[in-house]
Length: 126
Image 1 (tube, rainbow, N blue to C red):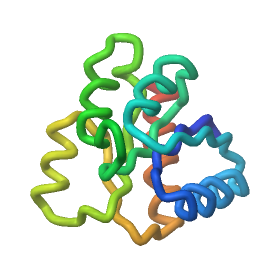
Image 2: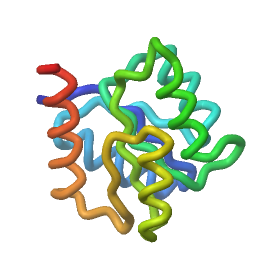
Image 3: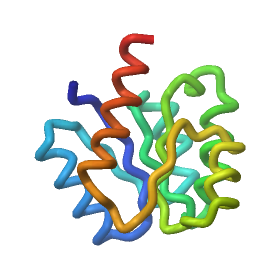
């Protein structure tokens, strides 16, 4: 069920590694490095899913998620937070901002892909 994913990650090494691993699994991956670009790219490109880091320049991932979810044109696009912020308060704050799922770094690819596929399946069938 490959789909088009917007990967929002400011660390170039993480962005490169994760995008290559997702592409090997058949996903098309668009990449941006800050929250402002995430909001604009989501609106322009309409990816099937956004994988959002929280610690981002210009506009953090919490606010970028809020803006994506506040826009009627993009609110149905699932946002999966992928972050090193592993505290329960960070998780709660991410869900309060509107994210649809949450995963932590370091990336455990099988778990992440499972979450991506579950969200994409819900989007496609819903």
